[in-house]
Image (tube, rainbow, N blue to C red; front, top):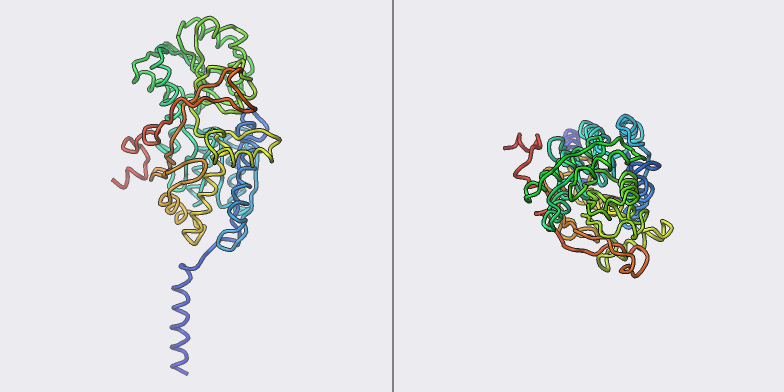
Length: 406
């Protein structure tokens, strides 16, 4: 009996030690929450299209990971940090959501990323833009995927100064994202030898840009930088055309422009805009193949960089779970940093310690109507910006948990 008891105890210890090595999925399901603007100023550039992209990633992965089902839920944060925070808390505490994806609007990003950090969950930012998300407000379980304001400014700001646009005036959305985009672009402009003559901040969202455009016009700046996005950018460009600003000799720089914006504006209005983008559907055979699959589910539209980024980030997350053998956030985050990103969205992408996914960016110019050969043929690619050049060097980090390691 003693020998049997010793044998049973030894067996139990062996099994107990083996448990962590076995595949583990909390609650028997991996649940992905897509949180974004479903009905407002950013709904075209992310919204339901991002949800569809995440669902495509789940389907392409096989619908299961570590033998357990993958579910997708979604919600509209209405561009309000308190609503986003309430959804995130409920998703994690009640609905057992494992990862939160997309997150346009910096204020919402900051709130949700902090919640995910405190509650040991992953967040994957595709549409949020502020550099602080992987800098001063970084998180060990937070990842920034598609672009950020530093990369946008580096591309468009530097390029336009080189082309002679050496004096700037900014129209800036009056919240954290707009402030950060203006700051990043102003730094890129001045480093390139340009000068900032002034700026004006507009409410978010904004329908009437007339007074702001008049101030920009009066500045005599060669370039009017639009430090806004989505519906605000569309309205500003349309109203600038009505004022004849471009015809009078000033240039517009869309600092965060999506292909959905160009579609809404039309090539006649948008032609000549120089933009920086993390993805273009018509870049190569791989981007076209994926985009056409997405388009078939989205009434013939083509995906924005934010929507494509949601697919890529979700797929990488699922691969990391598979590699880690668990959906525990810290273990998954470790694998996400180890595995390179190679898909239609990014080649040889890498996830840094601060959570920034580094990949090549594209400098593009919007085509003239007569140069567009088929629907959504909108961009002429001017230059590929290498990832290590596009993003803020990690040597300049202000990320608290990285600084603690030094």
